[in-house]
Every structure is written in structure tokens, then in C-alpha cells.
Length: 79
Image (cartoon, rainbow, N blue to C red):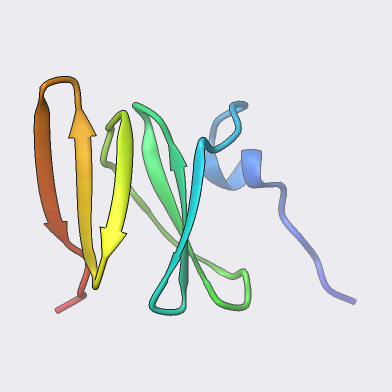
């Protein structure tokens, strides 16, 4: 028996993600102007990134976040 959580419960929002990105065995669900929820390749919840942006892209563990007239870059590699 496997219990599956509702994404809305995990993401703490009623909205749907606008973008889903797979990168380096992780799945990133982008909820615009709210946060990014991260899962492993098996669908287990890892963490929520408190990064509010309009649009995202991920390249080699680098998150590029566009919010209004600004672009922020984050290193996703955990130390």
C-alpha cells in the first residue's frame, strides 16, 4: 500500500504549477510568484524553495529566475 499526498497539500496552494522541469534526477514544480517544490525521481517530496518568480529555467544545477524586470541566478547544489 502506497500513500500519495495531494500536490496542493504539499505545495500549500490551490493553484496548479505553471511549469514542471526535470533536472539531475529531481523534479521541480514552479508555482508562479509563490515558490518551487522539489521532488526526487521517485516522487518523494524533498523541499520547497521560497523563491517567488514569474518564470524559471534550470541548467546544470543553476536555477534562473525571472521576476518582473530582474533575473536572479541560484546554485541548486547542496553543500
